[in-house]
Image (cartoon, rainbow, N blue to C red; front, side, top):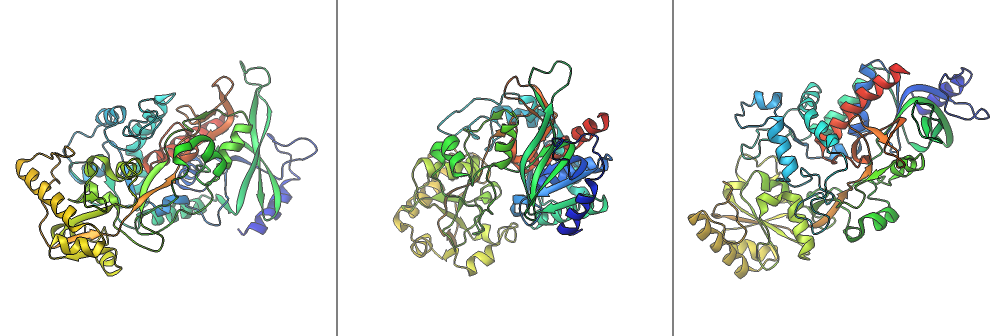
Length: 509
């Protein structure tokens, strides 16, 4: 259904009285539905599929001109406890929910398994302050195996799991755009309308008559959104806000992120930028309806990207292959494997390193992950510099040959002793490099997503700022939530959970 046809149908629906109309008597609802979902990213689409399969009437609005959100640009690495994919790959490591939750509590990995306010235990501020209600993240963790099953049901396939990091499941390249397309196709089958170029304007409310509700409390009864140049008033038994974060909102970034606000915005190491639209509108609008906020001061998600117009290898490579990160002087400055891409980017930021270079050898270039990291494409594009000697590769890349030679000699000595004297690496990927050698173009710290947003309970009801009670009719999912992380696993898990809980709520109303 085209947008103009949809609005014509909405106008016709206005003649039918809405049992739970959200608008005031002088402005009747243009349409009514069970659940209105604002945001067609992975969280919103997953919630829509889940709720529609439960029998709810669902309408999805999306401010961009296409569904899928930023998830379609993701590398597609899913953090999860033991799942059907672990069984399929015959993984023997201890990957049960208790082992997974232990990592979350201890903050062993980077973002943000510890779920501290700073998004990472290495951060210089707010370290160790836990979420207001850790049960929310716990429920997301417990749902992670269902996330894998859900992805597989839509045709997502996974690459071999790294035995050293058995909780991380890398999907095949191109899986995430295909997943988004499959979700949209399923919603078409379920007769769920996705209205693009439709922006949430406000939530409509009425007095909360729930027993025990505080005096003056309000419940959400629908929403107003802008589409095709006009305002549409929708009556809904439940509204799910899944509008994402606020990295494009300069005022919110300066107010809440402070030290992080000046970091340039960017995304992948192959030069693809972050699309616009992360303006925090869902957070702002829900706050006007009385919603509580959480974790707004946390560190944004960090990555590393090359200069505009250039390409460079992804620092996710540190998960799977032997590689080292050096500055322009050829010196290492962090534990690459333990820090992973976000920790390495944070180290660059803290040490004021304007451009870091990845160094690896022929065994990695021709290894099993060659296609995954697109080495041939990067070499042809001038994003990698090859040399028979490390000095030759370093000189081509603009790195100090003397400094890099010294660094690799230290690594060779330490690897023979199985002791990283500089940064304590003890993982199996810590080894000496053998030529030919490769040095990348430099990448610098960028921010690509915010943590922090609406506070929810384990059912993903949005909570009131006044008393932490649930606001009837209002739910949230994905990066707009402050109570979970913004990783794919938690984003999709929140969609699965909220789709069920919202559908159950409307069936009772």
